[in-house]
Image (cartoon, rainbow, N blue to C red; front, side, top):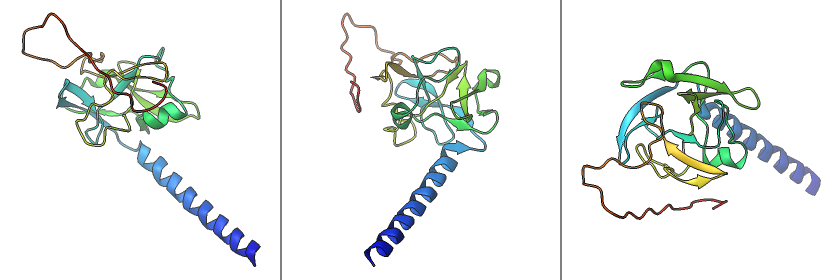
Length: 172
C-alpha cells in the first residue's frame, strides 16, 4: 500500500512539474515581442512588451550570449519566435536574434543579446543597472544600442561622486 501511495504521489508531482515548466517556457518565449523605449530614473531605456528594462551583458561576444544556467535564472533572456518588432523611437534595423544553446532564439539590439532582471518586478525598474555578476557588468540599453552608464541629470557635475552597487545574488 505504501508503494502505491508513493508511486501515485511521485506521478502527481511529476505531472505538476511538467505543466509548470511548460507554462514557464510558453511565457518566456512569446510569439510576438515588441521592444519599446520607456523613461526611467536612468533616462530612456529599452523595455520588453511588459515594460521591463532590457539589459546587455558585458561578457557577451560577437552577438552570442554568455549567460546560461544560474545566470539565465537571474537574467532571463528575451526569447522570441522570429524577429521582434520595434516600438516608437526604436530603430527596427538594430533588432535581430541570436540562437542560444538548445536552438531557441533570443532577441538582440545592436547585436547585444537582450535580458531582463529577475528582481525588476515592476515596469520601469532598473535594479540590474551596473551590477557585476557572472563575470561582467550588466547595463540597460539606450535607443542607440549602447550601455546606459549613469542616470541623466541636469545638475552640474560635482568634484566627487560615490557609487554604491547592491548585490542580490552570488557571486558578488
